[in-house]
Image (cartoon, rainbow, N blue to C red; front, side, top):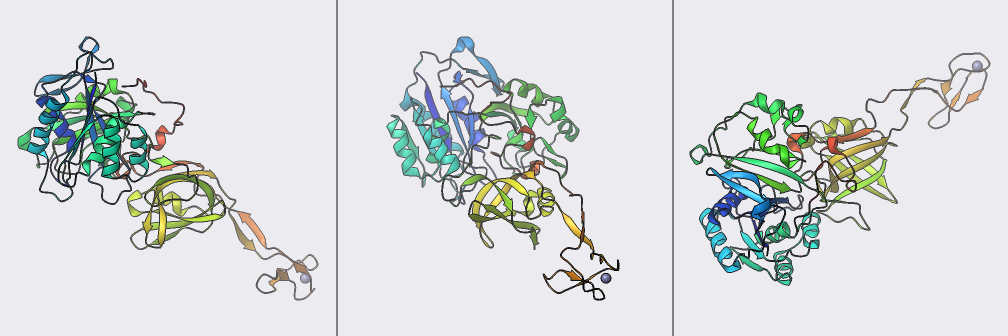
Length: 449
Ligand SMILES: [Zn+2]
């Protein structure tokens, strides 16, 4: 029988990381064969009170040793996983005690924002809870009741908000998924500058084409390396789990203390919905419409424009951190047909959609006035007859409605545009992977339960 263990909200802004704590849980449980991969599940990125990356962790126990494969290494020992369950049954109380002891040893209880939660269950809780947690707003009591309906056990510390992520992580049944291999630093190096060969990162995407978000060329930023002083050395994301160990080994770096491959919902756009009815704050949407105002750049480099939807109008914001996506946005004109992806949040001028991705579907014709029309009789340029009154020839008293226009080539092309890799949301699908969510992707979709 499978035992699902979810844990969340143990980390701090600048120290521990729940993914590291998970490796310590595997060690504490004496390297059980995992059923499926450990999971790193990102939740609603718009929630104002989220911790760092809003990622929740889980593992499932009782994989079948006979069909196990290697997915990591901790302290020189292999971490094994299998997609087949074994008959072995863990004692849930014992697991609860052991996992709690790791949380109590490592969680950053001193931080206001750290409120650990632990969920343990022999049955997977209703997967609807995952969708609510990645798309909407759920509370701890909802998590508790979903978990208890599955026959599971909760343990919380402080306000226990981490139970939401802990439960969501074990309730996830992937529609699609990606993977991330995390390499960790030796303890004595935590907080010091990370040593790795940047040139190895530069070519990573071409050496391993199924990996993504490795390097941001326009901002010369190495995206695989975290910016916080946490125990992570680097993390490589990809659609194909089978190449990630080799990808990791191709990066020359300071010694790796341990590593582990996670199954994740990163890059899946799971947080995005097509709205049914009214738009709600802190939800993420995909919307298509017509640009109805010229983009305006405000102080700080944030760009705004209005999008006309069916009978409705919505402000769209490309904030400074979206970097070069703003260049595309400033070149839009009224009449352009676009699709936008992003989270609805309060903004400086009321609520606005915070742009994550933009598809330019059809460009409006851009024409500029070249000259006044010429008189049919005398051939001389006509004069304006006043605002909105067309043109006239003073001498011949002829009239004409329109000036001479020329078409101007637009400075953007139709296509899909994302934000820079370095400021992309974990959940946001990179534009270069714009396959449809229903058609699957280059990874096998073996269902772990
Ligand atoms: Zn004339």
